[in-house]
Amino acid sequence: MVANLERAEPLTREDLAEEDTWDLSTVYGSGDEWEGDVALVPAATAAATHHRDRLGESAAGLAAAITSVMALRQLIEKVRVYATLRHHEDMTDGEALSRYERSARLAVDAGEALAFFEPELLALPADRFEALASASDLAPYRHLLDDLARNRPHVRSVEVEEILAQVADVERGAAESFAALDNADLTFDTVRDEAGNEVTLTKGRHALLLRSKDRSVRQAAHEAFMAPYLAHRHTLAALYASSVRGNIFGARVRRHASAREAALFSTNLPVSVYDNLIASVREATPVVGRYLELRRRVLGLDVLRAWDLQVPLSPEPERRYPYRDAVEIVLDGLGPLGEGYAADLRRGFDRRWVDVYETKGKRSGAYSWGAYGAPPVILMNWNGTIGDVFTLAHEAGHAMHSLYADAAQPFHAAQYPIFLAEIASTVNETLLNWHLVGRTRDEDALGRFALLNRFADTYLGTVVRQTMFAEFEARAHQTVEAGNPLTVDGLDALYGDLYAAYSPGVEVDDAIRATWGRIPHFYRAFYVFQYATGLSAAVALAAALRDEGTPAQERYLAFLAAGGSDYPLDTLSRAGVDLRSPEPVRAGLAEFERVIGAMEEIEESGALAS
Image (cartoon, rainbow, N blue to C red; front, side, top):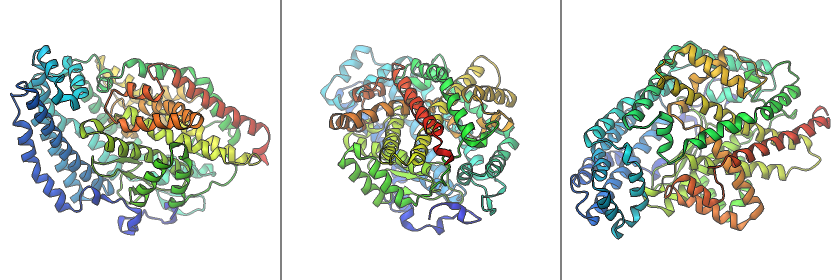
């Protein structure tokens, strides 16, 4: 099976072979096992709250309290992960939705029960807190306690923290309402593919059809895809505005200057990292314009439209890759990470880490996730494009990061922040691209051009587009923080203006202006900029792996194993990249420009017309 355009209607779960689905029995063997752990939550909660009002009595007592708190959190994580993964298999399945909602309620209740912990500890005199934190009994938790002390100005009283924990249940409403609308309720018209077959449009098929060499197919797919978002734009605006207000509420209650500062503070990132990214990418607008002009010339168009930005530029027919062929390509491409890394990843593929194909009701997109103590899993919606091959490498990077961090770190230190996660994933993409370019024969100009095009499109989408998203989020929140409402027209205008600035030469229409309404990451505020910083750091790390060999490999594997045991900028710095400086972003942009130059040389040689 390669692509899902072979059928008029989408696949269902019943159509899939077992080896093409993820194995969630590594988390729970059955729903009954899940219910068994749900039944353990009250006792685990009681064990954790037993230490309330006694945290400052002794180092041994505090160590026992933290251990019981972490046991509860690990239990909740496992329950939550399994319920969410089952829900994402088919978001129209009522039983799976019920399990998901129960798990969300358990997580909120646990958060409320544990709300006493931080304020009680921080109410201790500073010298008493430091004496406890320095005790040998608490050595495993030293970074956790140091980070808690850093949060002292933003942790409120026990009563306020309990209320904030309850508010979390309300605040998820906007994101979950958007997800239900986006993944379950919105429906798309049928469209015709290149062969003239009428197919029901889905998100996966939309992505595939935008790669069609037939511009009329691309346009029809784009217009049919955007139609329901345009029809629901007032609802989408209300949902997003509600999400933004919730972010600002949380930031203000915790005494942060802005929602953006609150989001970055959680992982000890200075706002300058965010601002340096935007400034550096803005400076590179002429380079972006140069690539888009190359795209316009190669496609032979008078003007670029939104539906012209995904189609590969090579005149060769685009190859389709069966999933298992792609697995071998990915494993070959990650050679610079070492034989041990490749062997561990192969075992994961063989043991059904991946849920491969798009099915009716399945969550769109791709991700890797898992519960501590169980192997990670990967959600895909496989169409067989070269983009899917790179997405598989990307998600494998996340999975291996989790595998190594979980093996090396205790539960409380294993979970790495997103700022680091998007580095591990894009290192894999970068290495795979260089591997494929390197094995392309010199006389195969079209093959080399196609791979260079792939890197350029990835860079455009991951660094340039995500930086535009980051600026959109910052300005949307600033609008509300200044006392102004977010309206449909205002959101359209903001997004349209930014799109024009970041994508010079592409015609901006009503559908583009409304695109903010279909971006699920906007409901996880100030998240997307980390895709851009991640790829920038990944280019530097991949270059070291390629050029230095074993020393860089050892640093990189130590970076993966570190998980969340230290602040992300410090962990990354030990691997050899300092994102406190704008230089890694600028170096990545220089690589983007080098690739564009190589593509221009091939175009000028006339190879694309031969």
